Amino acid sequence: MGPDYICWHPLVVEQTTHTLLACHYSFLYSLFDRRGVNFEQVSKELLPHLPSPASEVCDRLLEHWAVIAQPVTLIRNNIGFHGSSKRKGVGHGYAAYRSLHPQSSEYVMTLMRVFFRLVDQTYQGAERRMRPAAPGEIDSLMRIASKLRSEIEATPGEDVLKELARVFGWAK
Picture 1 (cartoon, rainbow, N blue to C red):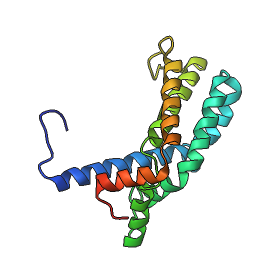
Picture 2: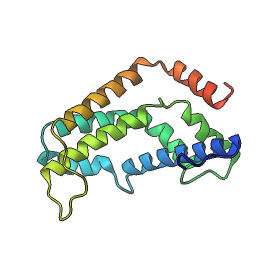
Picture 3: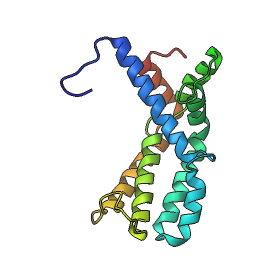
Picture 4: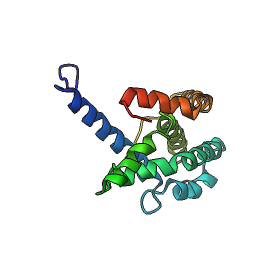
């Protein structure tokens, strides 16, 4: 896409956004997949060598992942990378969207950005994978994460469901 390109039909827009959202949640799942990246295991091994804020960041990450793991897994397994072959399974995947706060994945990814900046400050790789954190950048990202968390906690689940139902035209 880009400023000179448009989706020519609302159904194309809907299909594209659903596909991108399913891919996004499938990617998020992959970061915690125990048979893959397994952030929980990797972070445990790194934490003893990282500055103290890394432990708090990791705790927040894993705490929120525990809250959203079930719906993200349902999305991934039923409509994402490993889509269900049965209509009922697909229905479970789409229903899982309704239980996720729209800011949940942003919160997790913001905490990931902080965590890996702390890793990058501690370890020297053969090649630099990211630009060095600017002064105050980690604190700024933590403020963003705290604001996201506050928004998530302040929004009752029912309000999120009503808003998503309105936006996507879902029936209750």
